[in-house]
Amino acid sequence: MHKAYQSILPCNSRILKERWDRKYYDEHRQKVKEAQPMVDTKAPRTYVHLHLKLKKLQLEEERLATIERDNRILLEKMSQIMRTKGRVDHRNNYVHRSLNREKRQRELLRVTKENQEILKRILAREPEYNHLQWDKEWEENEAFMDNISRYPRDWWDQEQKEKDMRKEEAKKKRQEENKGRKSRTPRERRRTKSREEQNESDEEERKDEVDEVAAAQEKQEEETDGGKDTKGQEKVKETEDEQDKKKEEEKKEEEKKEEKAEEEKEEEKKEVEPETA
Image (cartoon, rainbow, N blue to C red; front, side, top):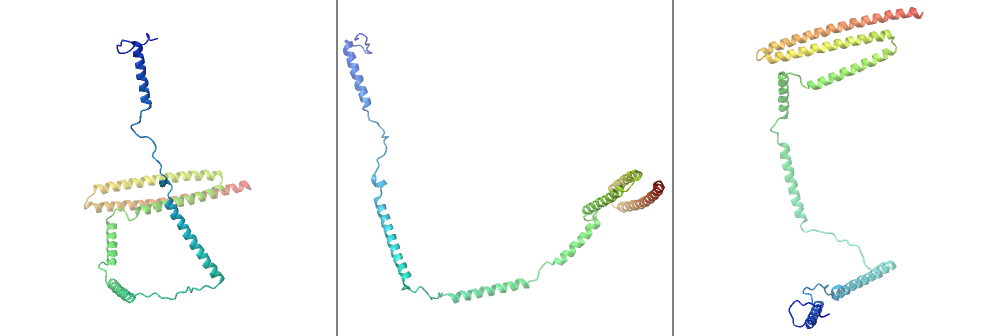
């Protein structure tokens, strides 16, 4: 076996070299096992006096003993009072009196008098601005603005109200027509439909005419300047008069149509009566 060992360093005897190397290795392993650490990683030492505080326990026991003693004395006194009427008078008729009461009262009276005088001065003071005059001036300014402005005040609300009134009137008319339709004959219904269509077409033509007149008025107002405004206003008045005349003529035509419709109804009734007979 000694022939199998191969030493790192040159030697005369391999057997001795093997023994020496084995011994050095064993010593090395023993030193490694017995080596001490350079850093202490152990848990710190525990001291009894830090965990078990005897002085604190002693003070707590003394406090509890005093509380028990006071409670026992109180119970004895309460039992004695319950058994007897007691020996101590608990009533106290002492009236608290302050040394600077009069001075404080005098100071309070002085302050109240000063406040009353200030209030009188404030109330007696006349205002420097007259609100009545302001209201009057504002009314005059509104009148000037109405004269200058193209449209009247709150024209948008007025238009909305007129539209609402027209819608309500149209609803009422439709309801009345619906009530009358139930009692009408098919001939009358056809005639009423044709009349409604004619009325609608007439209304559309009127609207178109009004729009054309308004557009012409706007063009005239844009073209005219300075002294020409009066001429434009006269033209506008003429157009308004023409519109009023047209409306009156249309109303008369409608009345004539209604009279004709009533006459036709009467004729139809006369025709229906002999048939039923």
